[in-house]
Image (tube, rainbow, N blue to C red; front, side, top):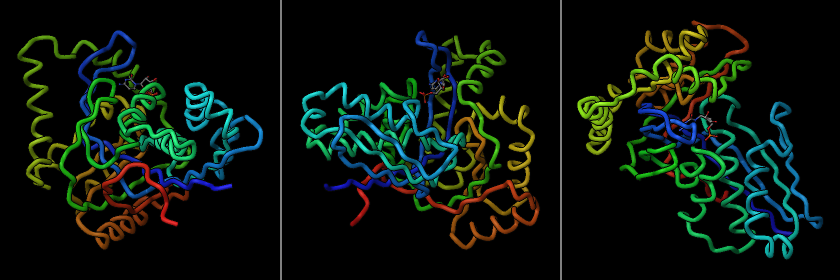
Length: 313
Ligand code: C5P
């Protein structure tokens, strides 16, 4: 039986601004999301029985119905019962390369790969937009993981506008192994601490728009210096004081010759942007020397211009 092997890239947030509370309990966001080459590998096969089975090479990832990849398959089974009856159940094999609880959309991109893979395996013929509508039912970052590249994400994060591809910047990621950060905790704490600073007047809205506009204009002009000077993440305001180790990564990167550094999403990954692979390797070596902790992991990767895609055979 044919298997479908998909590459599922991670993302970093170049920009994350929280504009307010939404009636659905989520937050109104303006984000600039960027795919990176660090990717999980997701393999799908039909099963002779009608159930969904998830296997994962990382014992810390729950291979059960709470896994977003499982939930993505379950959504497709419920949406397309005739195809499920015809093709049978689904085997999902996750090879994790993206760290968990890292602010890199690791779980979201696996779910995106499952949606894209089932569309192919069952010959559903759904468009990217239709797949993204299903993706939005599962999580705010999943629609972006399907299309990838560089995008402006608004509303909950699910409304996407593609942005011009950025030049090939290289990225060093740093993350403490046993330091996952809960995304709901980060947003809830932000709301509690800074909810009263949400823009409510036209002038405040204009100021917010201007701030995000600076990043968008920098990207439109491929102006690397301006892009790095507009790196922004509101969630740093709650995560950095609570997690000194994340602050330490941020501070240490700042001492090196890099273009810029920022926490990704709700953390705990901190990234540094540099111009070349050689610089990235040098920054990684300098960080290792400065922080010789065996629980600190590094990845050298670069911007990539695609979301989930079939692995070349
Ligand atoms: O959408 P997703 O399940 O990835 O979001 C994870 C959590 O992050 C949500 O349960 C919510 O607590 C928070 N979140 C939010 N506002 C958003 C996106 C996420 O409050 N726009």
